[in-house]
Length: 351
Ligand code: 13P
Ligand code: SF4
Image (cartoon, rainbow, N blue to C red; front, side, top):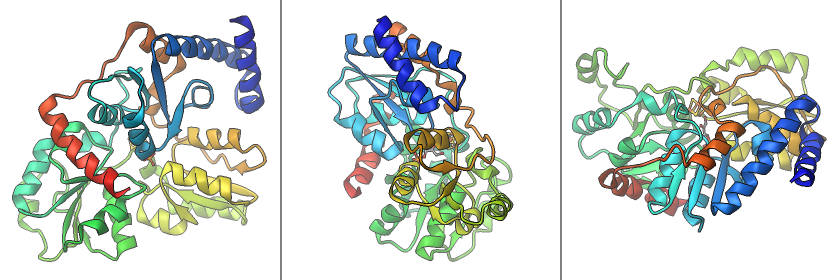
């Protein structure tokens, strides 16, 4: 055990030595070794979203990736237990795809501002208002919302999913900015008939314009909505050669001012495959640290520390407790799961 801890500490020090204090890396190395041992004993797999903090991401996650990659891999695994180091809607997707497995999430508080912006009743109201219009739902939603949906999408395949439907109008929920970014890329016109989920709904519904290619919803990611065009201009002034990457949950003004927009996995691939002197990532800041650790020769501009409070709930300490105490078990009622499964499966079939 001591040798394994020392080996893990050396690995973390080599990757993260200039980001975290020595004593922290020693504590985390010990936790990581305990987790990895228990993981084997319990025949568990740990999935780590790209936003996990660097020590966890580089020490215990068997599979890392964006939400689409993780949903796919979760479905393929032959392990008995899936520990999902990510937020609740992601763990629910793993359960939807792997109903016979035990799915655990290390923190019961890992929610998401975007996922909680819309309810299943809201989707039913939209469908009633726009009968026959297919519903495309971003995977950053809870299972009961997916169950009301025709097809899911991720930030990586949203354009492809919308185009695959080949219909004049789609309901696209719940991220306002992702909808606006998809509309920009596909040349579609998007409207937002409901200004807020609960205030003035009837009045808003009554003034729906006649023409729309996309009907959106006013959900926002509390992390990505923080970035502004001014942030990009400020950094470009300091570093004219900086390459700016933005997540499609940023506003369309921000993605238009960036050099590249894509899912977390697409941003990681972009940095790995290009040779710019420095990069600015407009997304959750832990991901910049994870990329910097994996690409020591490339400079990530650390403009800020915009962390997702929900992703930040997932720690090595809680991941260990999750395996020790089999907590927190993620359940999705079977009637909801089967309907949600259909919409996720339709998306996976498209790729
Ligand atoms: P990705 O699907 O790009 O990994 O994004 C997940 C997320 O929560 C973005 O805020
Ligand atoms: Fe939700 Fe935004 Fe956090 Fe992703 S980064 S989990 S969309 S709040």
